[in-house]
Amino acid sequence: MNRSIITGQRLAAVFLLGCVLFNYPLIALFNKPSEIADIPLLYFFLFGAWALLIGLMAWTIERSGE
Image 1: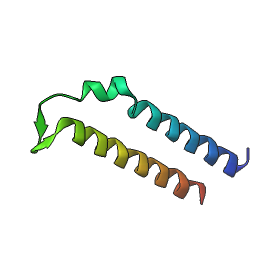
Image 2: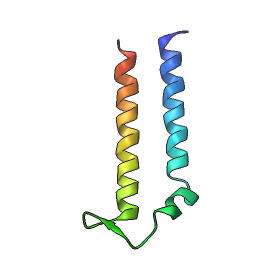
Image 3: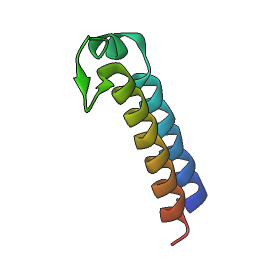
Image 4: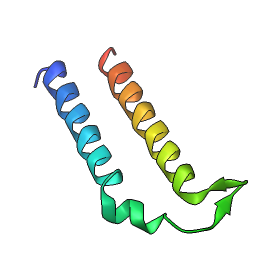
């Protein structure tokens, strides 16, 4: 297969992972009154998932340049 096709498929998979991570049932699991390092658990999850998705996209794009 062409590398651009594989890269596009991987980016589509990262997008679908983002849709799952930011969907209501999963977010509701983290909507609790607890904290991690004085950060509410929901905010920690949201920004952590966002950073994970950005990292996966960067890794996918950089990997396609090899």
